[in-house]
Length: 287
Image (cartoon, rainbow, N blue to C red):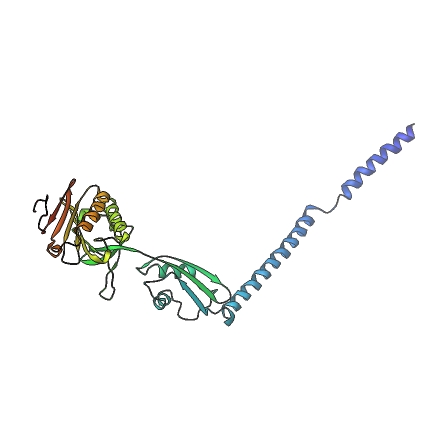
């Protein structure tokens, strides 16, 4: 019994000592092992990045990626030649080196251009989608005649070379403009309503038949026809219904032999309509 216990005890002590001596590599060896693995990974990634960089630099000078085709869509008022010039797309630049954000910024600086969307189509094509501004009217602004868009912003000075069958908005005061050069919401809403009536194309509200929309703080809105300068006073309230009444009145006046003497129509007196310049018919009062 005694010897057995001694042998078992010695065996236990030998196992414990062997576990300390043969417990695997030390902490320094493990760190050194991980260091080499990490170094290999870094070198592989660096080599891959360098390869990609060299490939990109080679692609930048390769004729295969030279811009050959620029497809411009959506432009009506701005010519393709002007857009190519403004966007810096005349020279056959490399399509990979093209800074689309900068091209977009330059194109949207053109007054007629509202938004631009660009898309590369490798290897050598660029698609340019253009949305132009739609003029609502012409307006006297900052000592000049400008196109006014549907957001109430004068966006371009009207040149003599540009022809536009748009009425001119006159009578606006400094208080009718907000900070930043935008038309006050109330007046803009009225002009949009007038524009909707113009778009319907019924006499006398053809855009090409109106020369002026005058804004007056007392009389409200007055329209002037291009032919003979007939003044149509609408007032300030209930413009939608007054425009409908105007269409009916104008239609009823057609065919009169003295229509050429018509000087004006006033609708600002509620339900009463006053026609100026024509001889009264039976049941009408002369004005």
